[in-house]
Length: 406
Image 1 (cartoon, rainbow, N blue to C red):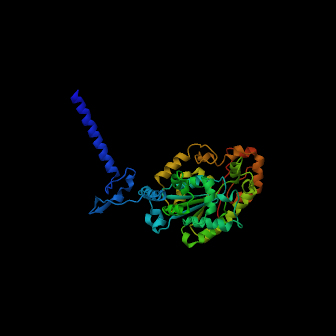
Image 2: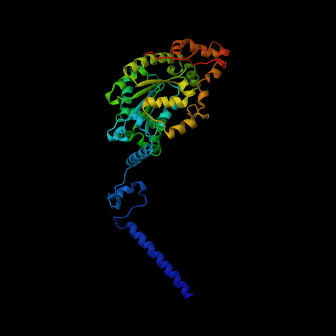
Image 3: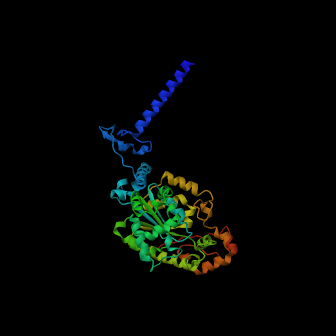
């Protein structure tokens, strides 16, 4: 019995000693102590390199605030993502494309109108590693088309500054985003961080610094007509910006807009006459801008893209100076072979989407659209349906050739 008591006493004393030692090492001033909360990626802060060997270097480490952690993490992530990406199309090394390092990023801009495939095309470009996505920066203007005063100057200034990663003085932009998170959520690389700390998304200083980490920038706008972007293309600091006009058959676009509550109150959205007037304006602007800015403005017809997603994607990437990536190939595979849920879903059986209007719209409505859109349809190679049976016939091909006169 006595030996058993002595054994338990020894165990108790030993355990108590261990606890006291651990407690002492935790709370005493120990220059070599590294708290558990210090992440593994910051180990290099404790090291210095001597003759190619890592040597332990005790330092006083100041805790980063949230923004600093995010900036550092994203910088490392971009380098890792692009370590195997082919940059040859850009003609530059990575550092030469990163604004933070004094470089100039590859910039692209999609110009279109509502329900014309911009969300899908925008996400294709955003699937490129190292891309910062300016998603619908003109959302705050609501459902209108900006064709000139009173909004054109302010809108163009906003877009210009965004391409330069200058988010200062954009109080209206950030205020809208504070109440409408979808303004930020499509920018997945930004949203991955600020969905947990929303204050980051509406911080102009943070957004400016974060944007400058990325070698690629893409933007899509559906509220601004093509002729107005001439001011942006003329900016010498944006001389490498390239624009893509995305066009869709007005019959398909109007069918897609049906039953969209946000569209019905706005004439710029539900009026086929206004839409087709913009299509004519964009055609004229395209011919002029292609002459003035060779190899910087191109057009994609939604139907052509949907029927030939991979080849059209490669053509577009070549125009932009970008390369196909594994991530983009996976995106195309998963987003073009099954139907998604929701009107804004980008999961599509691509070849079925462009001509859905033929079996959904009444011919009387199609005829009305064709009457007010005849010139626009002729310019962009869209063939009219002559009656209901013709419209739904498997022999009717709604798209034909078109030519942009230079």
